Amino acid sequence: MDQAPDLFAMGIPIFMLLFLIEIIATLLRKKDWYRITDTINTLSTGVLNISSNTVSKFATIAIYSFFLQFAPKELPSESIWTWLLGFIAYDFCYYWNHRLGHERNILWAAHSVHHQSEDYNLATSFRQTSFSWVFSWMFYVPMALAGIPLYVFIFAGTLDLLYQFWIHTRHIPKLGWLEKFFVTPSAHRVHHGCNACYMDKNYGGVFIIWDRLFGTYQEELDKEPVEYGISTPIRSWNPLWANVVFYHQLALDAWRCNSWKDKLLIWFMPTGWRPSDVVIEYPLTKRDKSYQKFDAKPTMQLQWYFAIQFFILILVLMLFLSIADKQSILFNSIATGVFAVNVYWIGSSLEDKPRKYLREFLRISSLAGLYLIWP
Image 1 (tube, one colour):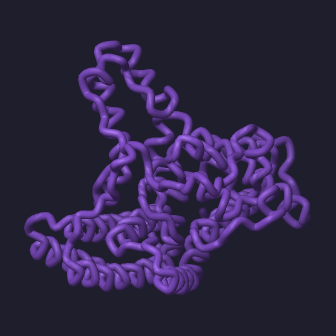
Image 2: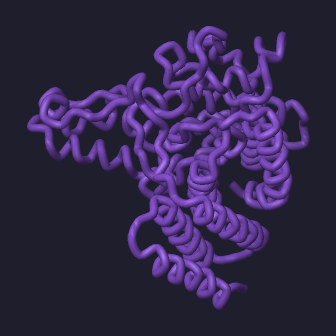
């Protein structure tokens, strides 16, 4: 989106400060709500999402602009009512985008990235797929046809996204009457739960009223602590694999099943549906009550080394975002590729895979190569 990168560039220092405050609060309360490995992996998917958005945003803008020209009348952007309507309309469309992202296989394959972490903290807000734009645009076409201006759409989307940062925390309890109207940390903790009573609930971005209206609201229960993660864990610190793992599973199932009808239907069926012959021959391992969080357990020295390296990578990302709007799609694509290489090799090293010293040399070399072509 046109102005989102600048807002993220300005906001990242604030987000980092809030991460630090939450980490200190977590340590003071003696909770295990942060792990270095999980946090780096979670933020790595955010790096991929934010950097790739400097390229994919052009498709989103072009598609919205295309449909906007078919609106009977474009609403006046100087009216505050247009901006208010645009924000409410965006959140309503987001609800259905989010809900279908949980209810259909092909959409869940992208959105599942956000739910893969088995921890829940402010970093989780940045755990986003790099492929959501491929399908999400269709949910906002009604806004364009209603004549909501492009920059109102961009502003509403950015504000809706920024609001959702603070609700990814376990430190804030229920907030009384606000729970009836707004998505709060308590309501969103429920959304991230893989408990049977919490799954597929509380889809709203800012307003919880959509969930109350359409029957998808669930209160956080004192007797049922939230368990975070997904029912089919990926057990990996590889952020590239996190983005494609369920597309890969769908493609495998489509290839293996015997029915040509099922080969097509599997992509559009409710989430979790698989052809019967594939279910029998290739069962998936689901988490149960004996499940333990994934942790490859690299040495603490290695974890801290890559925590420092990742912090440096975040600084490079901030510099990139500060200039990305003025650069060519080619440069932004190359930079995105360099970020992808970096987070992939950091994740591989945290899994303590062989040749980590060679990977680290190549990773640092890739950053040096980006410096050489830097504008």
